[in-house]
Image 1 (tube, rainbow, N blue to C red):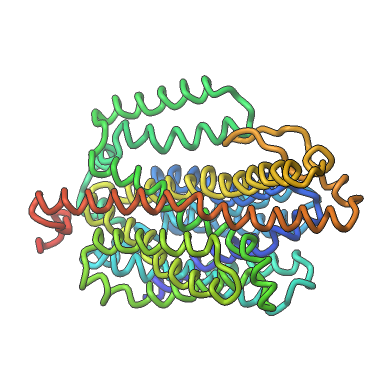
Image 2: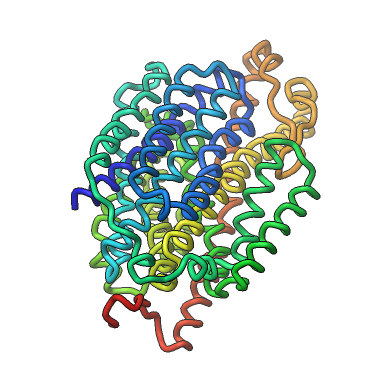
Length: 496
């Protein structure tokens, strides 16, 4: 159990990095004059490199060793904090956040298969409890940052990441790690790769390569060719195109990750204006929803025994959709009601998906378990965090143009930049230089339009939990026709 606790604390460290960066996004925007889309890109790079590290380490973690892998994670977390604290602009913030995501991916590449191996008969339950470390870190880190208040320099808040990092580093160094259940059962490395197959490799490779193309500026055709070569070569090598059910779960993981992590990347900023009217910081919304998630995950065992994992996922998707829609227009104390609904909806999404994959594909070992987590994280980073930033800029762009048309003003041409390009399309953002010199009445009007545009962006992403709901209902029908949902065990474990 000491090893299990060390795994939990390492997840606390990953969520410290997430919540503290979410809290200081507005500080970075003001100090370094960054657009909402640029802030979305920084929030996104805190997520998508996770996929690179978790997939790569899943391929070699059984060879390199779990303890050695955690040393790499520890070093990345320390370096990330230092680079971010001494950042002087966009690119240092981007690189520091990138390093944090790499460390986070290595942590999860280790802790997911370690806990699944420790509890082969109750994987879903213990993976849910393990992932209580994520909201636990969000609550603890958030409360520590909130206690300092908005007047405290953001550098001190980022430095808090070092506390759980040093703690898990000290605990891990004295622990012994057992071999993965796949290795213990004698399932070969190639058999593990077959569970993923060429199609599974195509999905995860496409997102990684296209995102790297955005960063390094190569053409879309280069990304297409590289993706096809890697996935086709992988499929031919393992002589498998992947398990169909696993491919479906990979596809469902995309809207799931956007619903939870994409939203959480922005929730403090999106709710800041309304929360200030209540005399509270916007970060309290994230802390509050995370506290609910922490409690629900700690008591996951009793709830999971009463419902099938897929049934609970379907119910959670519906509740999350209602919560997001309600948040998009809530004001005053109604925000807390909407946030409560959203928190109940998102609490079990991530760990239950990991549990389903681990229970249905034990031969996949660390690979299938971590590839789906990696796909989810890169989806949240590339699509979720980025699209929410773009939607805010795009809606503000359109709303300012509409305001000009109805009030016979020229705010649009006066204070917005030339057209810019992002992964999601063209947009025009606020020109900070011109805005700072604007008369007070123009500033007040533009700020009001921007704040309204922020909240409405939440309404646009309700489509993602709706997609999840339909998908889980179809999967429940599939398992019913197959005789019901059953946990699969490897040949070294007794059948149930």
